[in-house]
Length: 201
Image 1 (tube, helix red, strand yellow):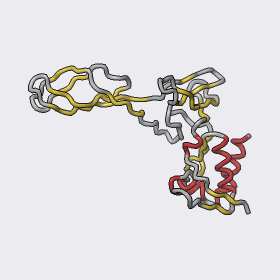
Image 2: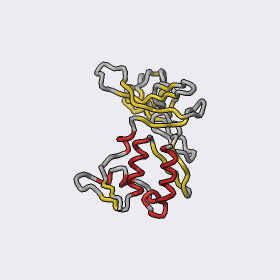
Image 3: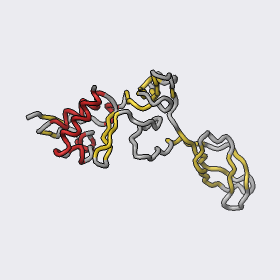
């Protein structure tokens, strides 16, 4: 009987390279961790590259909000403001004083937020919202993986007849502890292993 012991790996352990579908040519591309051009030299970012059509996406997709505190130019009362979501950084923003209803255009403070992920039933990576390459519908569920290391880890878990938790850490936060029930179910073992085998080929 094959044995699997939870190594307390979480999804982030497999996120240095994520295979995705290119948004231009639909070939296999990769989102990978690369050094960021900054003063500290320690920062990283995730860049998308397609080797088929040479499509490259450097910056993650973000949206922006104007928000902060402002003193009214008429009554001098201090108030909070918050805008709707913008696709670009708002350089100017029109605020209304809640005390005297005075309008004025200001240079706002801004907050960068991640764009809401597209909800189309497909699994997407979190940086550029690109569709994962390794994903398959299984009985109204989506079975997916980031890369070969992720596939091998899932394969070891699924084919194991004995699955052991690791008591040395908080196992409830590990990847296998958070797997959906259809992945853990014995009745789906052969079906999922066939999918993983095909992905490895």
